[in-house]
Length: 276
Image 1 (cartoon, rainbow, N blue to C red):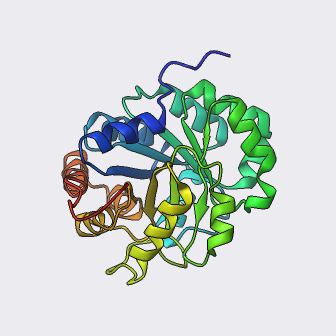
Image 2 (image 1 turned 90 degrees about the vertical axis):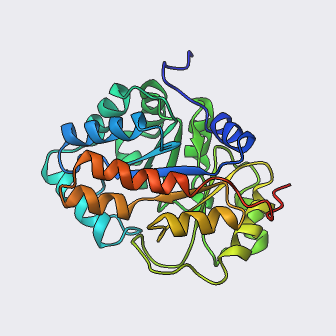
């Protein structure tokens, strides 16, 4: 099966950034928010900005249990605007992908669509990776196998309370990048990061071996981005802070100015961090 035009490998993107001494800025938006057409325009604008290294697109689900009120409200707006899984693939397929695009969704969406159909559609639309927020590792074998067949990275999620042995088990076949949840709870902006985050990143890097690690949940501004990259993470994931701007009807210029400050905080990686 041919790789569709626009399919970009996450591993190659992270390698390029490492060679330049940069961390990755991974920006999240909810597909369909505020409307499907507008979310397509926002996604393309972020890609074209040159400040986003990976674009994470949320495929809306009616019960997003891992998400806080900001993204829950965005999901509600998207669903009311007619967003659905077919439209998600249409939008992803229509993007001019200068950076890798990944999906974040919930297992019910994948299961209802059909596991093979979903992963094949990811490949056809040029989606490079898949994050399923609520799928336990022990129940993910079928989906992981389908992703592998379609050359789509299945991106594992681990939390601060994931023990060392379990983390090694989960991340033994990690590809694309590993999603480190910075704190217990749901997505949303936070004023400060956990005091134990540095140790969690160290454990995640050790378990992930060669796979990059990126930190999400509560990363809301350039200071946080700089902190997590300085602690040794390969990337920072910013969602709610961007979704807030979209909700408020912020102009594209102001959104891009904010995203630029986030990207600037990923370089340079502190020389004090030993990433070998």
